[in-house]
Length: 142
Image 1 (spheres, one colour):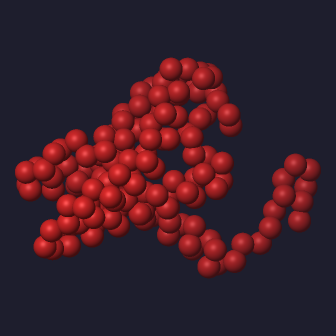
Image 2 (cartoon, rainbow, N blue to C red; image 1 turned 180 degrees about the vertical axis):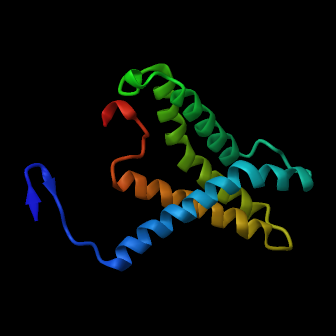
Image 3 (cartoon, helix red, strand yellow; image 1 turned 60 degrees about the vertical axis):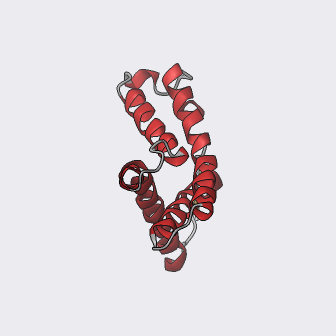
């Protein structure tokens, strides 16, 4: 079915559920890397500035700065929007780095498996956003 510029298609329930499962897992992975990972690193006397934590917090903080801009400037390539775009491009690379570090530094227990799962979740979310054309988060292109 189509009307004008809008094309619609039926989506199977499995496809719909899988898409939202990736979004939920990616959000959980981002939350883990932003808040829980620094706490775990502090407890285990590891370096606090993990790459995925730095990228996720940078994206969060730059997004908050961009959200404080007047709504008329959201569609412009301002400095805040460019920084959000840069952090969104660094996030998948940082997630890969987190996964590699977790596998290299694995110890007894499931903590490293949780880090690898969080890295995979962030990568899956990044891949899905890239599939829909949303991954460098660049509001001036929308």
